[in-house]
Image (cartoon, rainbow over all chains, first blue to last red; front, side, top):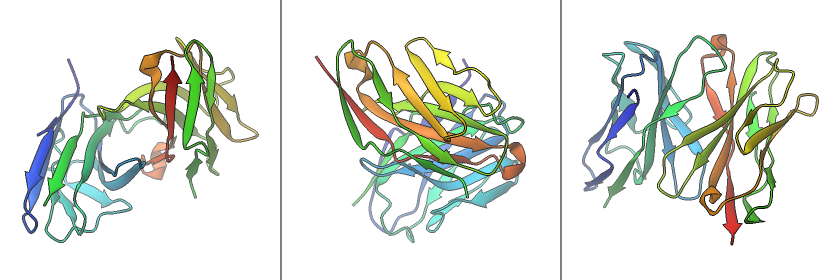
Length: 114
Length: 116
């Protein structure tokens, strides 16, 4: 079955360490997105990519970095520059061709930094 | 600027009753899509229903229907015959036309609790 896989589901890191969250999709979607969600809050866009080797900053890109070397993969690195990295991170994808296609989400990664 | 507004932080509904979750949007684009997602406590985002800006009829998917009032820029979600499993966060979202960068705009969500 096609879908989006985020790994790991839970991630624990010490403050000052960079950490990379994995996102892989086999839906053949061109566009991929990373969102951050804090407890009881909505989704905030970190980065998005519409095509391989190209990506754009979202509303809260500071302290994060991404790469898009393959269509299927869009890893997110949370750097030590991110002041409050503890959050729930959601990866999503969609075709670029039409505004009637929904976002397909992975199951998320809960990152805890102490 | 594109914007989605959900004014109900929390809602309660009796089991088997219907409930309406409000969503208003703001856009100057003639072409756009409106989506509703459900997020249970486990965290996954579940796509529920879609309404296109040019659709003449309100969308329906099982117990979910979308009350689309284009002139008022509202896209309210109606859940009929509520079940305990409907307790979750619900997010309204809008997608612009492909030439606006394929961005999705989310509301802040409504927490729905179904009471037995």
